[in-house]
Length: 581
Image 1 (cartoon, rainbow, N blue to C red):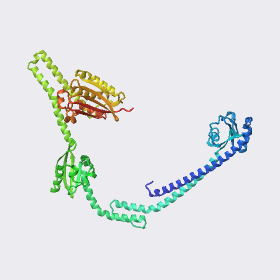
Image 2 (cartoon, helix red, strand yellow):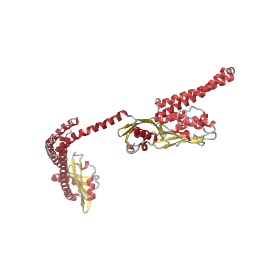
Image 3 (spheres, rainbow, N blue to C red):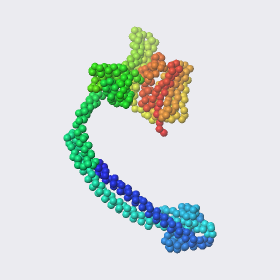
Image 4 (tube, rainbow, N blue to C red):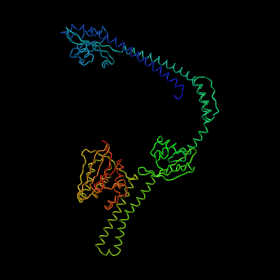
């Protein structure tokens, strides 16, 4: 409905009339109510004073006759009269039995009358079922207040008058609304008729019929609009060829270039970059536009490709290695265009990393398999060459073969476990877990190892540390792996500590040792599978414990890191989210 100009014209007028009528009705309704209420308040106050003056002789021994007095006076003034003692006891009432009425000491009008001389209150009467106005004045005898007179009248007459006024206002508003709707629709129809014609012809222009001309029938705003349309159709033909050229060029870029795209002018200044380029080079479009390519990419190799492309007019391509954090490998192709060149950038960094990880994985797993397999082969050959004849030697060698097979089995189990965690196949039973229980159970499992290694194993877990959201068994196993590593690489008489503290919305659990430490060059790769620092290789193990711990912690939404100084010890820390209360 609001898409039509007709209703856009009609609705505001209608709302204006309704708002004005409602405002005036609201004002007059309240004005009349306030006027009547003021008159009634003044009338009741005067009547209360007169009744109070007439009741003075009855105080001092004739209070029992006050009820008859209130009935007589109530009939004369056609109002409800109540005479109340200072303690709230009703001494007389024109409509109710005073003996059955409760104390009126807490009535607002009574309290106000005793405090200020006049008390007026309007409220709903639960007994009578309609609104009443109460006016009360104190009764004085020889300068002493001896009671309170209260006169009350129903507000039904005032409410009825106000209801009549409101009905009248509503009727007037309805008639005005109907008139406004008719007038606004008539005016809107006259106004929108030429606009509809403009819309019909402009639709043909939008469909490509640029020869259409709109007849200018008036000199007002509609005529100006028609003149503007005629000028537009003439200009469209002129600009159509330029728009088609630009559209074809941009379509070719969008359809054929899925990677980073940079366009430059003939001098090598950047004129366009796409979002993929912004992400690769970590630079915004505003920062790149107008600058030379060497400033944007900060790599001479890429700038050299661009210059050769501009000089020779032939496509140039090559690899660019950017010296950023962790290095970035980009494949760049520069293609000449009219008025500049087009550079296509393909990020090969992740592929290079995956290739390197694959080579490292193959090398590491080959190393881990070579040692036990070589041992088994040597032992088996020794047995074949006659060692099996010696029962003692045969038993010892079989035990060694069994140990090497156990290592291979452990390696297979840990590889499978790590693979399942990385692929998301492991279902974690995450629920609130007390940190102190996890820490104590993990420390109890490794305490015999620490005692055999002559190490001090200490715990520093605050009693008020909050619980965490975790799979208890998985986190406990990760913590055991960290403690086991700390014990393994700490010399006798050293110390291994387990502590926990709150870091924001997470709990940080740390394992600290005074061991041999980790070389600085090895720290970035310490959590890679099979990776071992040189000094750790002599300690045995599969090299998968830290990798498994890392993936378990990350699957819980936490982080894990290490701080170490070679020769002084290491601190492994991981975080877990705090469980909600």
